[in-house]
Length: 72
Image (cartoon, rainbow, N blue to C red):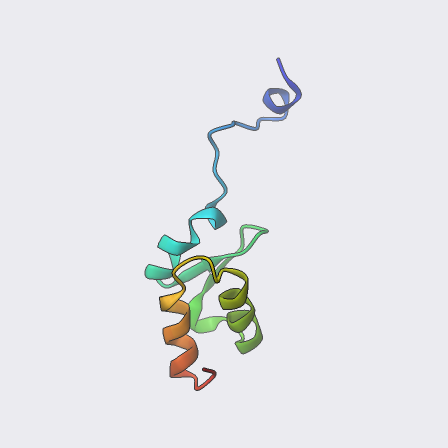
């Protein structure tokens, strides 16, 4: 067995934060530590930083929340 198999890692386990584009449509964000945050509960700085970091994805649900708060 490989080290990964010994440690219980499966090559098919995709971290949830890699599917944030879909998560945002459902009203939540998953950070790199796999902590789940409701978009409505994210701090202003966290929300804006997330929009900037994931600019290559469709961040429309995040931008909608930021616009609602008057941030953009």
